Length: 168
Image 1 (cartoon, rainbow, N blue to C red):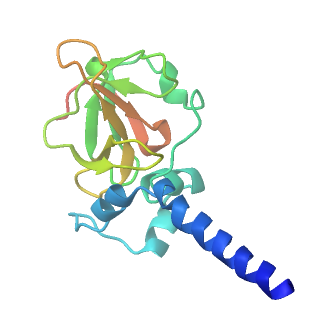
Image 2: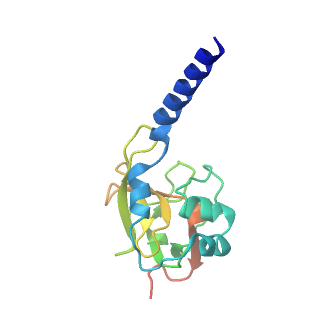
């Protein structure tokens, strides 16, 4: 009887682990394995970034909605990658989406890349920094004109640089 329970427990555990594969962003993880202009070891990224930045940028995490100080940022300037300082978004394209994350309707030219993210039983378009590959957030097609896009970004993945709203 005990052996039968152990066998059933092992089968159940294996099924649960196999069934949990939908939690891991398979396609986004594959995109993270691409080579980028800036390549660093895991130890180098951990030394450079805060734990929250590392979780989002390098592990494809998501910060809790409404926690970023950048949600309330209204000054003119540029939003750059917190991992490599690449200018990503202009304050001119930022808008209040009501989602709790900084949102933009257009990135700067040649700033971001995208990949398919099939985690959590849905298909989304993941957005990453084109230079270091850091995960920034996702883009959706429910944004305002002129693009109709909503780049929903993790504030911890960005750093705000006040000043002109176009990179020099």
